[in-house]
Amino acid sequence: MRLLTFQTASLEPRAGALEGEIVIDLAALAAAAGRRLPESAGDYVADETAFAAARDLLGAHRGAWPAGTAHRLAEVTLRAPLRPGKIVGVGLNYVEHVAESSRSLDTAKELPTRPVLFSKPATAVVGPGEPILHNAALTEQLDWECELAVVIGRTARGVAAGDALAHVFGYSITNDISARDQRRSGQWFFSKGQDSYAPLGPWIVTADEIGDPQDLDLSLRVNGEVKQKSNTRHMLFSIADLIADITSGMTLEPGDVIATGSPSGVGAAQVPPQFLRPGDVVELEIQNIGRLVNPVVAHP
Image (cartoon, rainbow, N blue to C red; front, side, top):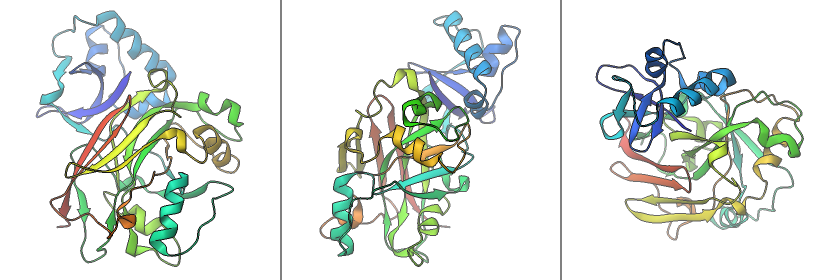
């Protein structure tokens, strides 16, 4: 299933499922069958019973959607698929990105022996088409990072790597926006956690539809020009290893998101360095998931 959050002129944001180019309103579909299901996409991530019921209803009605349950994708507004409880970011998780970070900072970096972790607040999340805010008073080095987002579906604590993927609900796309000139004494939270610095979407693709999450092409374009192009097979630490490491001391809950790290090609490593400016459009694409597009606008 492709689980998303959408709204229309007459509907507040609510959970939907993408069927081709049609968005199905899950709560409305349930109501048409005389049942009740949640209106929030996050509830389907956290509640396996609700998710199973929604999947069964979709299968029962596919191709013959009851009146008032189906909307054309082009006619709805997509929002971030959910509001994460927490976002756990992973730094320096692609070998080539470690190398380019060494060059751009003119400081030799060794490959991490354990995942480098940081956090982003839920307030940083924006959805497809929503603006990335360029605040010139705070940064002149606004940078991009295309990352596979892992959405947790089951509470995970002290999970072994061999069991880790069973705790994954699905996958999405996130852009780890970073103000390179806003590091504070080596800390990343402010430089990566400001409002709009975590575009997420366009939907969550459930794990059963992804195949091997360690073999997905990913790319990023700015104004149509390719800046990043790689494959998740080049992660230094796999998704399973990341979940095992994080849950060794931190509980992951349904709806939490792991941003699994960026490949090479960030703006700071371009020659000369290139950074986002108002008017730019950033487009991320990950195989089997889709495209996430956001404009950059001046902070009001």
